[in-house]
Picture 1: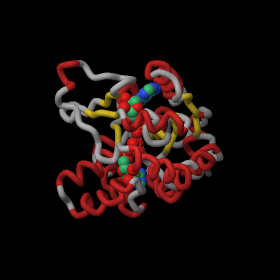
Picture 2 (picture 1 turned 135 degrees about the vertical axis):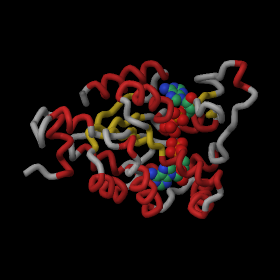
Picture 3 (picture 1 turned 180 degrees about the horizontal axis):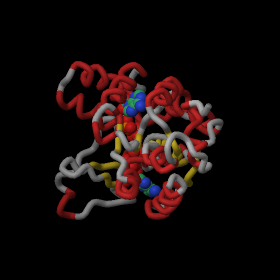
Picture 4 (picture 1 turned 30 degrees about the vertical axis):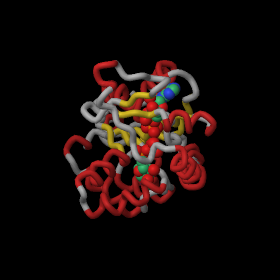
Length: 233
Ligand code: ADP
Ligand code: ADP
């Protein structure tokens, strides 16, 4: 009997579970893991294109709820602007609801979730994680990445004032996230080290953790990410 929590590693090893390996592989989800500013959002689009799995970004979902002015969004905003994690119950509720949508049945790409061990435990009850792609970037590179980040509100494209400048035709409409300032980023990094980084060991112990060197240019990171995604096929 294969338990739910390690079904992913059995499938990666080519072990037949259920009716066919293909069916299980197709339903595996990917977790994009890393500190704030590691490049998760930047790399997500290519993974979506390669796998057909939809991207589920808890940060984007929370910002949408905040912009819509829902009670949950307004409560979450306080945590986000302080650079603290939103409580686990709220995040797990959001994910449970999102995974019920029909596009999630063949697995999804989680971006920025899970961020705590209780979130990972809850996730293991409701989905099969087949691969964790960890984009590793040292703290000293993070502040410059976050403070220079800009977003295109029309397309969701992510740019950087120095490392990935926007084309001139979109430059005028770029926005900067309110929490992308030097003070908040230090709180976010502290939250990452105390609450999220322990998840690396949690996923290593389950043989799901693939480390990527995120401290190189976007294309080089993309090549390593693509190679990691291939291991799921
Ligand atoms: P995350 O989703 O992990 O918070 P983003 O993908 O939003 O990170 O990237 C944070 C910022 O760093 C953005 O401005 C992005 O353009 C930039 N960035 C992403 N990857 C790299 C990289 N490999 N080298 C330099 N800058 C990068
Ligand atoms: P970044 O990758 O730059 O840290 P995100 O967009 O992923 O940014 O997250 C922005 C903020 O939203 C976080 O600082 C946190 O307050 C909240 N948040 C996002 N995802 C989670 C999560 N899984 N658990 C708790 N809080 C979250």
